[in-house]
Length: 431
Image (cartoon, rainbow, N blue to C red):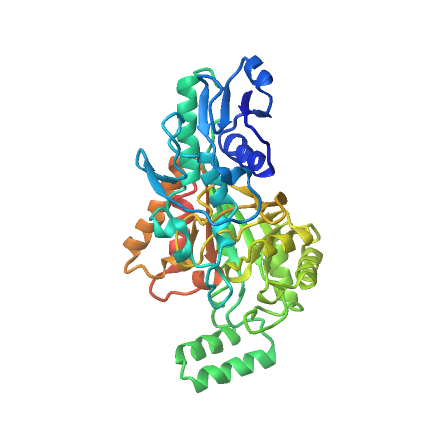
C-alpha cells in the first residue's frame, strides 16, 4: 500500500488522490497526518505538503487542495517533458508541478464556477476553458500526468504494485429524434408538410410523401442496422432516448406512440437504454423524474444513465438534480462543437460539488468526440484524421474512448455519408 502523508486531510484531497491513484493507476493507498505513522510505514510512501520530512518522494502541495469555496486563482502554464501543466512547484519536489491540485482544478470544473458568458442554451463555452486557450483541449492531460507520475514512482519503488489499465470504447447514440417523418401523428404531419411546401423545401416534401406512402424507409430509422453492427463487432453501446412532451426544443415522436415504445423495447433487448433528458427538464426536477419514470415503465427496468439535451450543464445544479432523480451515471461531460476533453481526462470520475465540498454519488463519463464537432471538416479524409487523432490520444493512455453520435446526423447524407462514417468509426476504433 502507498501511504500518503499530508498536513491536513480534506474532502478535495481524498477525492483527488482516489481518482489519480485508485481509479487511473490502480494503486492501493492510505492517508495519514501523523509523522510517526509515516516513518514506521515500510512500504511505498510519499509526502504531499509544503516541506519534505526527510528524503522521501515529495510533491509540494498547492493551497487549492486545502481551501474551501471558489477563489481567484492565477494559472501559469509550464511544460513537463512535452506535456502542459500548471501550479508549478520548487526544485525539491519530485514532480515540477502539483499534479493533484491541477487534476482537481480540471475534474471539479473549477473554471465553470468562475464568471463567464453563457451561450444561447446556457452552456459554458469551450473557448473560455484553460485547455482551449492553452492548446491542450485534445490532450487527456490528467491521464498523462498520472502515468508519468507512475513512472517516477516506479523509479523510486521498483516493486510497486499497480493494476494495468486497458483501452475501452463506448458508442453513445443520441436519439433526440427517432424518426424524421414517420409516427408523427396526423396534425403534426400535415403542419410539417405545409411548412415544407411553403418554404420550398421540395426534397423534404418528396421524402415526407414517400415515407408516408411507405415507399421508402424513414431516413432516421437505421436502428436495425445499428443493432446488427453493434452485435457483429461486440460494441458497448448506450442509446439515449428522449421521452418527453413536445416543446420548442423537444420535438421527438409522441411518448404515446406504440410504435415508438416498441422501438425502445427492441433496442433495450440488445443495448443499454438511457434517458436523453428534455430541454424543458433542465431546471425542473419533477419533470426530470417523470421522464425517467415513464421510460422505465416502457422497458420495465431501471434507467440509471442520463444525458442532457444539447449537452447543457450548469454546474453544480445540473448534477445535483440528476442525483435527486437517482441517476448513477451521466454522459454529458463534453462539448458539442469542439473535440476534446472538457475535464482533461478520458477516465470516468465522480462529480465533486465545490460549494458543498463533497463528492456527489454520480459518475461522469467524459466523451471525447461528438459528431457535430466534425461538421466543419472539409473532406471525409480530414474528418477521419480528426477522429484518429483523438483516438490515438485515448489509446496511448489506455483510457475510455466515448463517442456521441446523433441519430439525426446518422440519418442524413448532406456533405458526408454519416451512416457509413458511423460504421467506420465502430469498426476501426473498437480495438
